[in-house]
Amino acid sequence: MNINGLWDKLEPRPETIDIVRMDLKEGKVPELPFFIIDQNEVKAALADKLRDIDGERMQTNLIIGQYGNGKTNLLKYLQLFFEENVGPKVIYSRADIEQPDIVLFLLKIIQDHATPLLEQSISKLHGQGVNYSDLANQYRDDFSGIREYTEKLFSSEIVGSSEDLRRLIYLGTGRLYTKGHYTHFGLQQLQSFNKREVLVLFLNILAASGNYFIFAIDEVEKIQEKSKLRFNRFLTSYRELIDLFNKIKGHLLITCLTDAAGTKIIQEANEAFFTRIQPDIKSLPVISENADLLELITYLNDFFSAGKEDALGPMVIQLEKKRHQRNRDLLRNAIELLLNETETISLQELLTREQGLKAIFEETRSRLELEGAFKSLHQKFFDPLNYYLEANFGEVKLDRRDNQSFIDLRNNKTHFFLFNEEQDIDGINRKLNTLIGKYENDVIIYAPFKLELRKSSIRLSSDIYQIEIIDYDPEELFIMLNIYKDNFEYQEQVSKLIATYTKNNL
Image 1 (cartoon, one colour):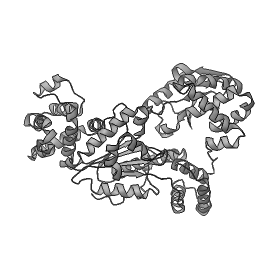
Image 2 (cartoon, helix red, strand yellow):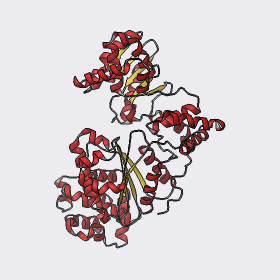
Image 3 (cartoon, one colour):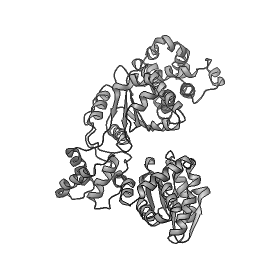
């Protein structure tokens, strides 16, 4: 497949430029990022796979990197590139912790994003008289279990009825599953183990009609964090899918995992999977080379029309000195330098600056862990927060049970706390609009770092209220609030620390 121009700097859509600038200033990945700096090993590997995405077998890459090093940015770039160019369809999704079987997860993706295309493809291939047994490995081995289903799918009475064709596709994806739905078509009920062959069939149908997909699955680590058993199930089903790649014509599966320990977590969890995926594992490093830093800040200078061409060299030296551990922090720092904004300082650096705080911080963290205080944190957070507010704020009103908020009555601001990095943006927007309707205030949102909440994602029912997003780690702020509550001699230092940490909002 022709992929000319891949990895070139793209032109952001004119209608999104203001939103992209807003996201970049926050250090967030724009919804559709338009450039990738460095990461040459990953870019080369993906380019090789994409050139052969319409080839004789399905392919995969597993991309590993620390949080904030650009995994999501990479996937979203591909999404923009192929929206602007003829080629495969990119479907981006976060891993589903409730569905660790990657085969069933991909079937759900096809159901949600490709059912009409699948219907058109089946009708097209039926009209062309394609030997559809070839799409199901000629019913050899385990594919014999879907022979009746495949023949029914391509039968004239089904192809001629859009309603029946869709219902039959839904039997394959799992949306319809009861015995009665199968009886309607005179079929034996498909079992869970048949779904691997059904996925192969659907992907081959799409490929045979010239339609190829890039399945981009992000944040796989969430499954591991939820349960080691679920993570092993995910890796086992991934291995089973890889073993079927030689029976699937084309397509590409990209999965992303945040892991500071590299491949160790995968190898320990599932050696059989690791031996299969190892050649296709690629890592995302921190951008550190002088030439790459200069390229980054040159792009940003141009995009923000900062007019700092003569100062870019010294800025690169400053970025080098910082030795950022995450590309997200590097990006934010570069923009702060360009736009003369106050530099964001990490909590660890802040703790180091304050005499004695780093030790008491770690001691308090250990004590709270032993006490199980971080479990159900959203229920325990407001007790030390209330103590802090009584000492440092004027009149406030807590709304902790229903809305996890407090209202600063003196300044007419609502402070809204998010604790779960898995929350969906629709739910957040509903809650925000509820708070605005109830209190008619501007809102300060405290959002977990890994939620990557962007202002561009906020949808308010009224445009007269302002939103400010404070990225934070709920556990870190909880620890600081407890230090303040339990250690009178550190209160002045901790108060300054919390103020800096929350950009002077607490």
